[in-house]
Image (cartoon, rainbow, N blue to C red; front, side, top):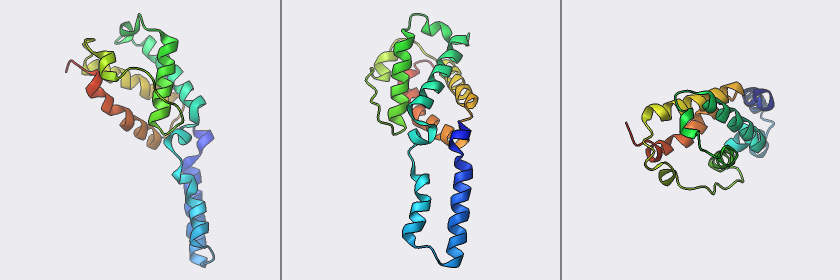
Amino acid sequence: MVSKYGMGVMLLGALALSGGCADTGGVSETQRSAVAAPMAKSLYERLGGKPAITAVVDQFVANVAADGRINNRFATTDIPRLKGHLVDQVCQATGGPCRYQGREMKATHLGMQISSADFGALVQDLVAALDKFNVPAGEKGELLALLGPMKKDIVEVP
């Protein structure tokens, strides 16, 4: 993913360009705004859109399936349906065009006795998927910050 984005390189290039031009006085505010425009992309766009989100979700679900700490919780789950819901949920949360149409998190997980340790294992599996695709730290942090508040609706056991 990093090669697709090159956000750091693009950001440094934009800063160098706007800084260098500012010294000459030859660049208008409108031109400077055009140079800075790539930084205003949504998280969805910076992650690579739906194809990239789908790849990360596929890897995440594979990680969970291989994780003996929590994989038994998904033994009766319709995995293709789960993947579709996860893609839509991440897509929507990051500013993409998708709409999550699954059930509310609280209703879905009610009575499952999911612990903080279970949730932590799930997050570790997600981070491993993001790392596999070299998602930059900034985007990874933004995504985790968007998804983190769901913990209160999922975890029932401290």
